Image (cartoon, rainbow, N blue to C red; front, side, top):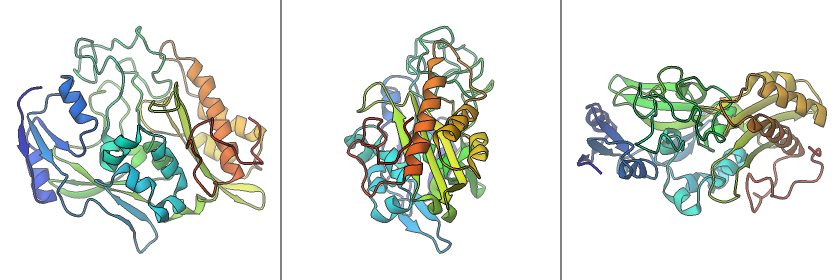
Length: 352
């Protein structure tokens, strides 16, 4: 690990000023950043420690009914907050499906949004990776790529975004609050992460020195609380990233889907909102046939980036199943294996 300067600001303004210097990086829990530094994948010359800043560690319901989550809130604290989990159970289920209990106790909301891909070529400094070193190429193309993206990829990068947490945030229309030298601004979560295009090293819309201060879920997202689920398929049930995942939220009235929200994980280069599938579901009666049509719509633009064509069929099945689970209703208690296909399924779920 290279030598670096350590800075501990006492305010958001001080943090933004310190991080505006070239080579700076923000330090929260460090569950991803420190591993990358130890492996020589990233080499910041300055770490700006956010962990002692005020006003970044709260979970609150705002007067308009929206929920505001500070960037330093721990994943486990958010997942187990009774009021939040009741209003946004799909977010809690996704959080509990990520990493291990030890990591969830340390990892933060802001860090989850900023985590880097787990592509093995990105994490190997000896491999060519345009995301790590622009212009060097992409060894994942033509390499071991069965876990890579089938949506949103380019000839410069096919790496998957790894987050569980971001998937339901995308589905529910979350907003990211950002502080920078020019003041504060807000960006929809679906616009926060960038597609790789020909600049895969630019992973988010953050400018130099900007930092996440909070994530906000709009009040209308809580209207889906009775019918929302997260489903994740992985190579092992514990401590693994998704091969394919989906978050579904339905508003059902008189046996009809009035509104639907759907987002995909593990299959794209960023958290992927499936708006075509949502439009198809609106006005339909819940059932196997319409769920399968929605799954087809969600993956209509998907194409293999290598030896990963199986992800398209797997993703469709995950979408159809999670929609059926959501239609059956949010369980009163979180399953013992949250977000897992091995968890008990409520009665009435369409057999898909």
